Length: 317
Image 1: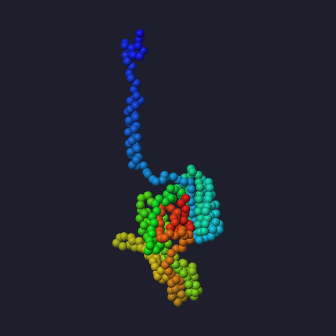
Image 2: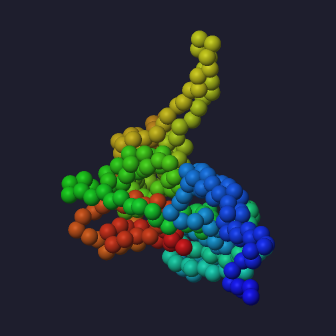
Image 3: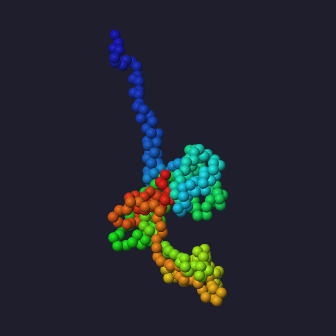
């Protein structure tokens, strides 16, 4: 009687079945090595960033018009922009915020829109509309990206240096150096006080000399500039000549000639007005802290508790 559990004595034994890895070992090892090499290459070449590269379907139009009233801003700035941008392809919604001297128009578009091309179209619409807006209005357009949010901020504080000097240090010394760093898009200076010269006309001297405020403004604008008289040839080289008429002190500004009398005597700015160093006015102030300081941020206009900002500062959208 044959034993069912054992092999037959007369027949040959069948080969043992092979495992899946044994049958496909070479293709599997090749695939693992190939993936490891590709991963090692990408680990050193793939771009790395804090935020992903995302194009949000939103364009922000910011307008600064000094201290114009809200009603005037709404009629002369906000509504014309809203009506003009309706021709932009892919536009779905328009929202605006109007305040004293500033306006912000937000354009919401379709997610499938090419935002680079859309921004160019918005810039073209704003350029055509610029002639209809007030001459004092300054218009800026921005595409919302992750670069619009702050990455890092620095603060300059001092117990002895005035805010206008802090602003000069931040603007002319620190900001150019930070802008030259790799990966820095924009550096925004907030706070401090912008230095300027203040010209106060004398109401009694103006009629006596026949000078108007418009004459003073035109004389300062015409004189305070840098111009080029042309090229100068020297030793087989062409040198660009520059003539500077910029004023650097209140005394120099007071020496600008406004007009000449019939007798040939010059009437200077200092003869009909008082010139003194001053700072630019700030229309919106943040509650001050113990120290005056100037803050620098990248791609941000959001104030903190110890910085001052203009009413036209663009919000971080």
